[in-house]
Length: 337
Image 1 (cartoon, one colour):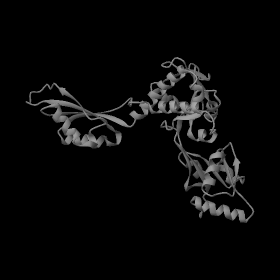
Image 2 (cartoon, helix red, strand yellow):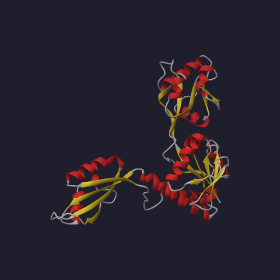
Image 3 (cartoon, helix red, strand yellow):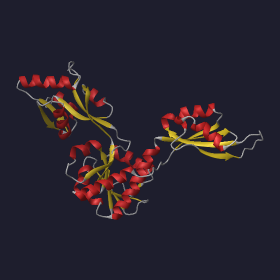
Image 4 (cartoon, one colour):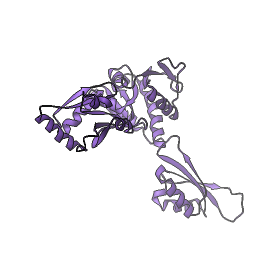
């Protein structure tokens, strides 16, 4: 059985299940109190619900083959010599940032350089800058890389926004999605104080999945659908009816503007018009990036297009599944070692 660990936390579970359903991988859970489920379209795959904070370690230790978790948690707990790898770094949901929050009363501290200067003042007073965080590894790496050395990390599990006010820390480093909680607790972020931009990611244990070809086949299916769905979010299909003597003439009118000719060029099909206006009509379809849709529509109008329709894409499969090729490469690298 391929074991896929998914978040059980309320704030994570619904967006994760919604995402997988949009990828054609709906999770069927017979009882919300059960911590196992199935994916009917993937016989042989077993879903395990776990706390999102625990999933990276579960995958790293081999208790699950795949998992969806926060990039922040993975980066914090990943062992450099371990078997955990990231297959898809950005699944497009649960976006947030790991940021440094300082008291807003520190009016002279707005950047990391200011914080470094303040830490030196603390050292002259025989004190260390205290930072409360659930991410000691990431925070330490960030501080040391920026020459902030006079600090102590205070590990905290609860609502650490209150730490400066309660006096057991001077600053905090925590996850923030909107900054509202920080502001409500009279904290502000530094202009260059983002330690990590995080979101949901797909991780795997390369050692486990390399052992069974059946697991690799299931993983390839999962990766194909997820990757194609994420790619589809970037594109729209635009179709217009255009008049022309031949399909080649219509295609040339479109391809003369590279910005609107689509991923590979237009698809042209003859329209058997009900009218008798003495001309030939063709339906031209292009697949374009979503931010170029109106530019394409306006151009098609200028060259005589009408009845223009725009449709979202469900899946866009490329010539190869990049994340699966990355997995195979990591497995091969491990075998060489």
